[in-house]
Every structure is written in structure tokens, then in C-alpha cells.
Length: 80
Length: 194
Image 1 (cartoon, each protein chain N blue to C red):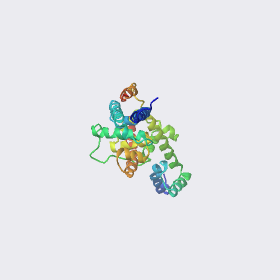
Image 2 (cartoon, chains in turn yellow, green):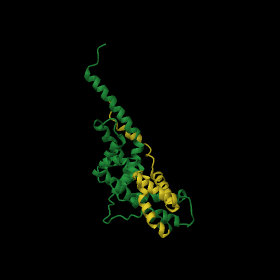
Image 3 (cartoon, each protein chain N blue to C red):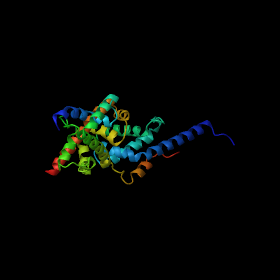
Image 4 (cartoon, rainbow over the protein chains, first blue to last red):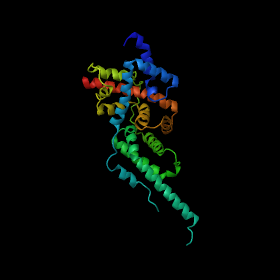
């Protein structure tokens, strides 16, 4: 990374999470996209973060244990 | 035919509401377990916790307001039970957890072979086990928020209600928690290589 990009890229890094969460102000969003349009280096890192979020969610998703649903149904309070 | 007395009508209507409530709650149990699994310390603890949650939910169904978010209501019960019973893993470290900048993990992973690769491929260098253990290593205050928002798809406001913390705290813990998680993942890569 060269010096010219150092500050804008550090700033872009700070905006990454709120950008992907869609909570930047309109002016900040435009600023981030303006930088991303011209910076492949940051663009890669944003794309990686998007992939990472999906990947983490899939990796940690565990199916419910067999039989748990039946155990829960058995906890229902019988009608009088 | 004589009309049913008002009391009988009321009881029948309440029974219908209760059955509907129970069925809606049961239909959410997969999603509740998926979140509970990472709020609790283990799969077994999560299973117990989900059962206790449903037992309590079925007993106190009248306190649920129809039309509000039932999944968040169930998770609120679950979170309180988890705290009450001291089942949170006591990982809160004496020192501030390490967090890295947001680009740190990508830089570590993409250095591994030096070649420019698709970002989607870079992420695949992390194993499922690495991710599960990295998440469990994140201190619970931060992990709870990541689990609710990034894995459970709850809004910031729902997460704030479930954990009984201000929405601003949800946002700051999420931001820092993700950085701590990435730091843990980057460290797991170093351990795998060495």
C-alpha cells in the first residue's frame, strides 16, 4: 500500500462494518463508495468481509438434536 | 339448543389461543436452538436450556403479546435462564480482549500463499472447527451480540431488548466483537501453520 492511499484506506476500513450494516449516513456511504470505486485494495477487503459473514453463519449453524422437538412438544400443557 | 354459558366460551377461546401459541413457539424451535447453541457453552447445555425455555414459555404464555416478535420473546426467556443459572462460560478475561483492525484477518489469510485469489476462496482457508472455537473464545458480552445479530438475524433493537442493554451498547459490542472474532480466527491460522 502506498502513502497516498494510506489515510483514505484506513478511513475506508473504519467505514466497512457500518457500510455493510447499512447504517452509514448518505454522505458517508457516498464517500465510501467513491473510494471503493478507485481502490481495488479496499474493494477486495470489503468483498472478503461479506463472504466471511456468510461463511461464519454457515459454519456455526448446527441442526437441532434428534428428538428435541418431540421433547419440547411433550412439555405442552394438556387441555383440560 | 341452549347457548354455552359465557364462561365456557371464554375457556374455549383461551384454549384455542394457547394451542396456537404453543404451535407457533414449537415451529420456531430450530431457530431458537441455533442461537442457543452459541449462547450456551455446549450442545448439551443448549439442549437443556431450550427445554427449560419452552417449559417456562408454555407456563407463562399469557404474558406474550400476540403480534409481537415471538422468537425474540423466547430468546429473552432463554437469555435470562442462562444468566440465572450461571451457565454462561466464565470467560470474561481480566484484561481487555485483543481485537485487530478490520482488514487484519484478510491480510493474514491472503499472505498465506501470496497469490491474488478470489475473496470467496480466501475465506475457505478457515475450517469449520476454527470458526466454532474462535467464536467460543470471544468473551460472552461480545459473543452474545454477534450470535443474536449475525447468526440469529435479530435487529439491533431486538438484541437490545433480549439482553436488556441499550441499543448503542449492542452496536458498539457488535463492532468490537467482530474484530475480536477476526483476531481469534487469525490466531487460529497461525496455530494451524506452526
